[in-house]
Each structure stands twice: as C-alpha cells, then as structure tokens.
Length: 257
Image (cartoon, rainbow, N blue to C red; front, side, top):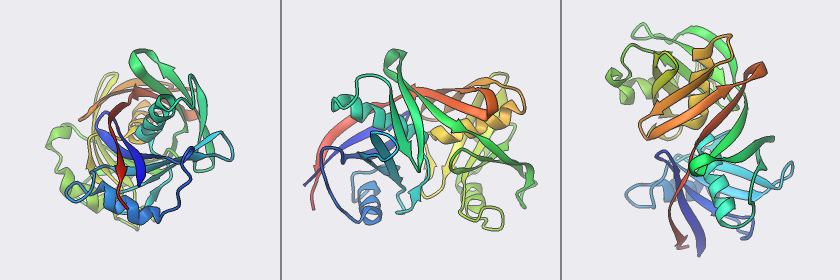
C-alpha cells in the first residue's frame, strides 16, 4: 500500500507521494496514468513525488496524466510545500529542487505560499501560430509556454485550439503548454491547455509566463485570474518571477497495489 495526499492549488490537483519518509520504487509513468484517471483512478492533473534532493533537502518530480514528466509545475510546488509542512519536515521557508534547479518557498499570509520561480525567458514574441490568424509569445519558465493575447478569453474554443498548438512540433519540439489571456490594466484573465493534461483550472508556471509576456520590458506585478482562483505574480530584476497562492489538502489515502 502506498500512502498519498490529494492536494490542489486553485483547482490544479495532484496526487502527492511522500518519498522522504517512504522509500518506494515504482514505474512512475504507469502509476501516473493510473491514478490521474478521473473515472478509474483517484483523478488528478498530475502525480507528484516528493523525494530527498541532491541540491536541496527536498526534490519534486511531476508526471502528467499521459505519463510524461514535466520540467516544472508552479502550483505543484505549493502543494509540495503544504505536504512538507503538514508532515513536519519544514516549519518555515525552505529550498526545493526541481529539474536540477532550486526554488525558495516561503509561507505567506492566509495560509498561502510564495515561490521564487526563477527566470521567465522570452524565447520569441509575435510568433505566427499558422491558423485563425493567431500570434503569440513563446516563454520559457523551466518548461515551455505559448501565450496568446485575445480580446475575450471566454470565447476561445480551448479544446480545439489548445491541442493544435500544443502538438505543433514545427514550433515546439517537445510540445508546449498553451495559454489564452485577456489583459485589463494590472489584472490578467487566462485559460490553459496544459501539455500532457489538457484543460486545467490553473497553471502556476503558466501564470508566470503570461505575466512575463504582459509586462514586456518593464518590471511589473499582476493579479492573475484563473478558472480555479487567483495568483499574484511579481517580476523582479533579470526576469526573475515569484508566484504567491494557496494550496489545500483534499484528503489522504492509500493506493492499492
């Protein structure tokens, strides 16, 4: 039996495994497909492993529902912070290793967590997406993002356009996360098609990518509205991003073999 915690960050939900105190070896890609299935499994946007790290005391790995491993997961980092806090491994700020980089996570007011996400690098702007006259930004936040500004994000046929852009291998050799966004002054409203997961209620690294594209060359902070809730995103010097938002335990359980 494998103990797990179901945790979500503004509706972006994960099955989280504590491998710090439980040494377990599994076919993680296979397990991710199984547990993330919303009809025959627990149901989640991803499987998160919390392990002892090499560069920090703790390391996060995240597997998408299709079994692929993601380089980064912003909402997942906050879920890890909640798991580590609830388990008594941390009582304040700490460093978390993700894909060979470390990220500082600090408790914030109202039970939220602030995550230093690292650099959001603009790879390209005004990219021709080859259909519907769409043009977008390509932003790297440790994982790839396509950001498309539209007049009305609610009118976007996300389930049609999302997979077409995600799987355009002529532009994105490893596929990409896709975000449509409408800007109103210092607030951004976005909807997401996640690589390997489909439509999700939130994407933390995506919110950082969207904020970076909206900020241009000016250091700027935004309140980002996602279907599952809100995130606050700050941009510091040299495109360094920080994201603040909640994480909430849904339930604990054990996985049958």
